[in-house]
Length: 205
Image 1: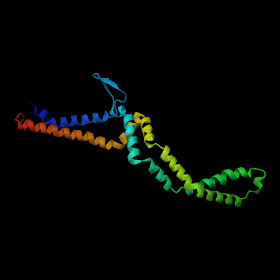
Image 2: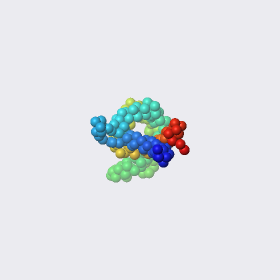
Image 3: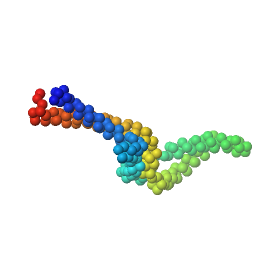
Image 4: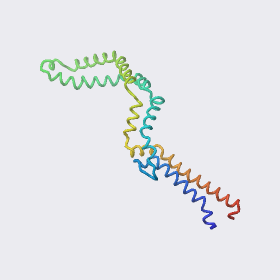
C-alpha cells in the first residue's frame, strides 16, 4: 500500500470530520423550505421547529426569567415622581398656558405667578395619587401582560434569515469550535487507524 496514502489517513479523517460538522451546523438552518431527497422530506432543524422553539422559549422566559410579578414589582419600585412633574411642567407650562392666554377674558388675568401656582398645585395632587395610580398600572401589568405570548409571537414573526443571523451572532464561536472539534476527532481517529495498521503489520514506518 502506498505510504503516502497511509500517512495521509489522519489528515483525510480530519478533513472529513471538519466537513461533516460544518454540514451539520449548516443543516440547523438549511434547507429553509422542505425538499425531497431519497424519498424523504428534508428541512433544517430550526425552520422545521421554529414554532416549538418559540413556544418553549417564551415559556422558559416567563417561568424562570421574567415573571409578570417581577415586572409589576419593578414598576412599583420605580421613582416616577420626576417624570410626573416633568409631564405637568410640559402640559401646563406649554400646552395649557398657551391656550388659556389665547382666550379673550382669561388670558388678560393669567400671569407667570398664577401659572407657577397652578403647576405646584397639580404636582401636589399628582404626588397624592401617584402611589394608587402606579399600583393600578402594576396590577394591570400582572393581569394583562403575557410574557410567554409576547416572546412566542416575536420569535415566530422573525424571518428565517434574520433568525439565522441572530443565532450566528450569539453562537458563532461555538459553531466554529464544533467544526474544529470534528477536525480534531477526525485526525485522532485517522491516527488510531494508522497505528492499528502498524500494529497489525500491514504497514511499516
